[in-house]
Length: 394
Ligand code: PMP
Image (cartoon, rainbow, N blue to C red; front, side):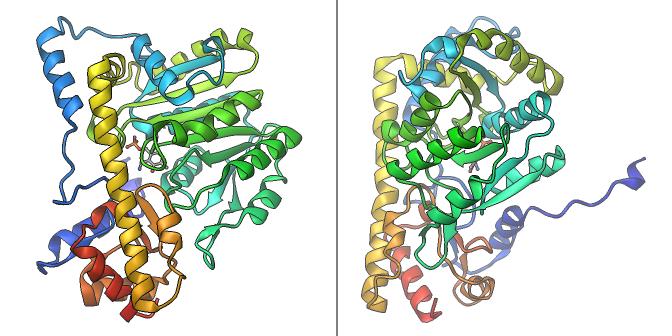
């Protein structure tokens, strides 16, 4: 059988990481990979995570299985973090998953299981794993216009026009904050218009929330997700702890299925448990336990929130520096969108040729669609990048 396997297309970002590693230039700059890096280029373990892990080693008395939905205390603590008091607790069915990707996958599984006719509307562009998993599960995809390359913002009229084509039961996949790969986000009024459209068409929202705390703040970044969950009859939410707790490899995520009719919650919860069982049985526990300890211990939580806030502000600072430097060098405001974008990523809006030119001539690595990881910069490399962008005539 193995001889009949088809080679899969190589992951472009992983390939880029390898080319970067092989590049002998000492002054090369990595803006490709999607992890947070501090000014020293490191992805440190957060202080609160270290403290919680130490405590866990001392206090944990068993490694026996947890439930199929994960530790209920984790589901509660994360539901609180994401939804606050936007919806009654009884209306949320939640399942721990291996990372945000696991939550996305299980949400798609639930969609396919619950409504095999559903199509999933995705932003153009979106995180490539969305389309890859949808294709793998043979769920039809409908792209909706999203990024306006001219302004670096959202083509909101295009988006609204496209999502208004949804049929009842179709799913609209939305990025809760810090859109990946563009960095361009909806404002509150636009979110309200998207909600009104979904209420009109009968589409079901699925919110992917992978960067809570990386954009405008922990509460602010959850605001859109909360508005959607409070307004819609049903909402799916895939949350990731990879970035905001810096626990990427621990694979810690949560899928929430919210229903305005809380009588539906027990059956939905049982279905999430069933779907976990089919794919991997019990979800990973270590990261989830660390997150729960941090969120429920006031001291650890305060320290975590402080470090997360420093992380967020450092990225905002780099954005502003880059936008200012480009303004100075080009004498135009056309890169002002970089300071407006939120999260780790910004799409520069450069052609694939220019992206390649930056790599070949300056050792600057960004993804082929000109997605840059802002956290890959520091105060020394911002002027180098700005000069290279200006010289390349982007
Ligand atoms: N959704 C989006 C939009 C993402 O960017 C990511 C992280 N790259 C994820 C989900 C999931 O990440 P993880 O599985 O590492 O938690």
